[in-house]
Amino acid sequence: MSLRALSVIGRSALLGALALGLSGCGALDSLGFGGEPEAPNTQILRQNNGGAAGMNAAARPAGTVTVNAFLWRAALDTVTFMPLVQADPYGGVILTDWYSPPATPSERFKVNLYILDAALRADGVRATVFRQELKNGVWIDAPVTAETGTQLEDTILTRARQLRQQSAAPSN
Image (cartoon, rainbow, N blue to C red):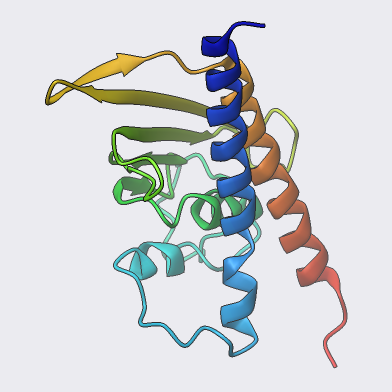
């Protein structure tokens, strides 16, 4: 396998591990261990928190398409470390701005997430990942493997299932 292929696989694995690792951070906050100040994305994270489709009936405009609340929250949880450009709970669209991991400042990522269904289904979320590298002071588009988007979708689905299980568990 070429060095370039190993590098792409390594970066994909890093992004997947980063997304998976950070998707569980919200659980600590709910237990009272989140001593850090709230992130700027907190208001967006708190939107869409009621009703079967994740929206209060009074807040949901008539005739709009709804998205699955668990997929919506899981998607936001998964990309909460990235700056958000748009989060539309009615259309199920989450767009991030560019994010450079501290370990690789000459590389940055951007993610577009689409919640496609009101049901919690494996095909209910689509992720598109973009990557750029800094070369000679200019950001250049770089390839992203198809597995990167699939790994991100799997991370979101896993988190959504966890959220559904937590909501179904009897409270003490």
